[in-house]
Image (cartoon, rainbow, N blue to C red; front, side, top):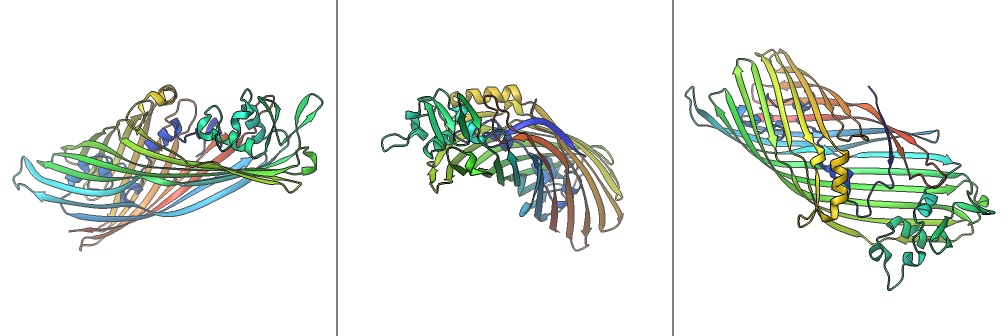
Length: 508
């Protein structure tokens, strides 16, 4: 199934000067659950099922279902595939990475063997991966009519060029906020020339009479690699009341690591056409975001009658404390042999993100020892995401927070799963997950189908395998902004991929 997203994404210009922005806050607030192999195979539809160490991240009451101690370890393989179409050229990046999705331990303590009241308390600890940011894309095309560099020159209109110069006494990267870092780099690498004190022409343009024209065909190349993850260490307690009502609570400590590497270049297909003797340039952007967060969760599972289960959970916002570092470089080349390389300083900023409150509801039916069906529904209102300064002040982020509240919305996740046990010790599983779009005009929904096998022995050892396929979705992008009398070309990314999980577990 393909999802078409009618948007234009300015990839190389999407990162704010300081690396923080509404879309960073959105990225760090979203979950794309991985799981144990059993839970992922069933679409992670475990709100009402429980007895799974990964599902404690979704519903803390999952631990209260346990009647035995359990240890699980889940290594994983993640593949992302991005097909790019840009200016009639097609390219594909296929990237596979190894990781760990889950490491968990749960143990119950019997309180009473009577039929009613508190029967057991369960304690659990797990490390669960909540999102994986890994992706890699590549685009190339020959452009006859516009340029990234010309868009930079156009964006500087009205800015006095004396303020862009890097000198011993003046650092425009920090001292002149009216210009972006890439504009400062382009000027100081001689890729821009002044038409007046506050008007500019790029090295990819010529002057013909009183007109500025695009000088000639340019090879435009863009590579982007993102990696990192959002993980959670949870400390859980659960309570079994009369084998009918199961309660749970979590303290969750999240850790985030995100790395973004972007490389954009333009090269003259025929340097003789360029009056500036332009041959090419490469712009690099690197950003690292890291931090920790804290949240609390409460959950409940009820069995109103034999086989039928209901579950619900609620999680506070996660209070993330983050640090960004970033830098940029421009390397310029000219046909007469002249070269110039300018490096920015390393930027650093500490800030906070408050993610949205999150809730889950679910229902399932267990057909004895034969199998089960389960459905979940999850919601989060992304318009409530807040960015704050390190000390909790929102004044520096008022414009960003206004954008968030006006352009983001509630998004809902649907999860469904099934399990069949045709013979003792063997299980067949299948699942479906759909993540809603949290943006009002941009963004896209994403869908996953999954399946797996489970094997268990009378000795308490079990092995589960799961495979999840991301269904294709398509988004449109632009590598730079439109500028005066010129429209940036639009390309498309078709994204798909898969995950393979293997869980080794011990029950005792």
